[in-house]
Length: 31
Length: 501
Image (cartoon, rainbow over all chains, first blue to last red; front, side, top):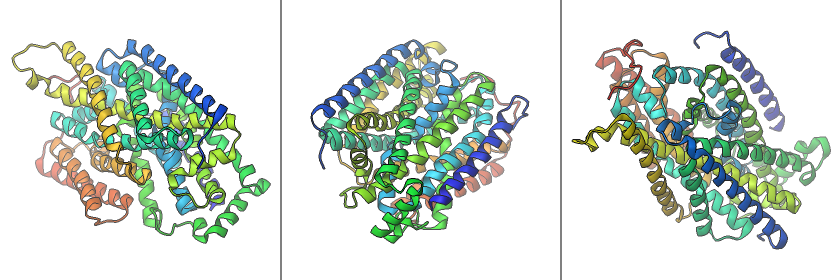
């Protein structure tokens, strides 16, 4: 269970950062 | 269970006096910004976006995450990790998806101060604004949950009787919020957030000596938990709230939509410039991660160290007293108290801002019939109403807190689930669906809340997360049906730029 926890947390960071960069960078359109 | 004694006790009391003094000073400083409703409710543009982000995460993480959830982990084992996973993952992703559009609409409406006001402008309905504000009063139970957490800490560790713990907590919070509004709330949260992040990290690191096993500390923890009860390391709990895949999926839905809680989403309204949303959301993510994913491990470790506690909510206080030398215990106690205060102050601010901005203000023309009042005068009266309401809400929460409830986590989760069930459809459809209208939104609101309360009261759906999910779906359906049947589109151009009474 703990291994799963750390792996999933890493994945969530990756997804979050990708979203953050694409939605909140200056050039992004209405989204 | 021994309370602290001697020099450690005085160290904690000393730290707390300095801490409360500092909060009050920030309260006074915030008074300059809390003269208007916008200032009191949002302090727009007055606080650095990085701090607003930390404040978001600090307000989000309350006694629930610092005491309640580790208590559940103590009782039910590793299945509780699905919850903390969602606290960071689902909630941060929810914030990233909701924040920008919510901000843009708020900006387009000419600046709104609260979530109910946002909904009122979006659907051109004062009635909706008032109904949502009334729904927010459910948060009094959330406040009660925080009071209980604080009083439990005071009682367990310092030996202050439960009643006085509640009184101290209520008094301090309404003092600095009453003086300083949103400015004080976010600045104090910024500091509290740092305490909380450091506390979580300390608890995480402590596992290396309380559980041992070097790099295999989690393997060691698994083995020791399994030795007490094999169910404790199962991915699904035996009994408890995380006992099925459906329950866990429903929890993720709850945590994703949790950012819609009025006292959280309205922090977006504190941001003045669109480009400041970028540091705000990143800061929220980092702080959320540190605070929400690590503290729960202390609850699991506590089960190994003290397997026979009377109440699961004692797990964290007991654990920190076992794991840390006295000076760090004092620091961590302040960290835990920070968690509680940073949520409580946000809740008080949210509830009382709504009483002033969303109940008093829309109804003011009727209340003051015959008296000509300027917009500014009404705004001032609204701020005054909010501050007076603060005292009454504090007293109400004190009264309810005196009948000490059994599980902190369950009480808190009931109150916010009821609110989210009501608002999720109007907010989400407000973004994407032009056909949503005020009738649909109001019916959706009542459907969501009504069904949720019905399910919980009559035990129709045993699991509160599934009940919330079902209520939310029904709310969406009803809102869409009623909007479609009652017709007119609220087109973008028709949305008023500034509210005309």
